[in-house]
Image 1 (cartoon, helix red, strand yellow):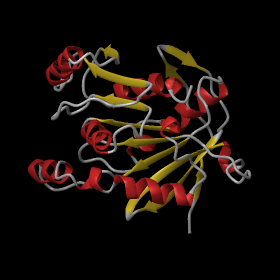
Image 2: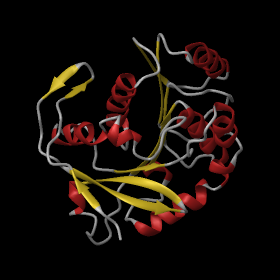
Image 3: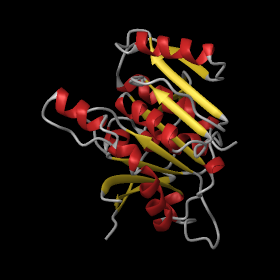
Image 4: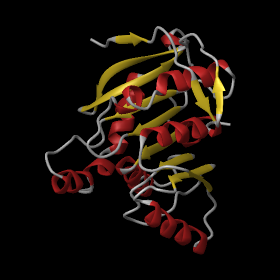
Length: 245
């Protein structure tokens, strides 16, 4: 049975460098298992409108990094107060955000890396989306789908969008592990964020050079700092208002 965890109060949010006032909770989360993958799912307006006949929400598939899990974006990334504040300010469209455990933690770096890069995640992502769409009133239209991730989740974003070409109109990569070079197809927004002190800065620079050589349009944001949650909170705050316009 699904459990809903209602956020009682939203924290103050630094959005695009501006301190935002406290806002009442507009969203809630639920825990679910989709295609045998543990997930946390953000639902706008506490789910009150999800039962509206024929209503479909756009959806963001938001992935964590190495040694993370499905709770990272809510417990470390402050996703709920960020999303609630942006909704309150009218800066984002109501959307469902599905946060899967895209790379269950392993004891060593080598085991974690090998598990994350063996191709299983992207090979089954179409089935994962199909089950998610059967459980919730979310859109199956590519124009109403977004995918993003941090670090290893950024790598998964690259791989999923490559396997499922043209299925995501919005793509976000935050401090991404750019082990491969490819580009999205039929997209509206391709957003890349990296910190100047991030250990993946040089690989992201090389990836951007490849994109430019291949005439791929993208939005780039370079921040201070490194491979850390303050930056990823900043990036998701900047990315969300660009979705589903």
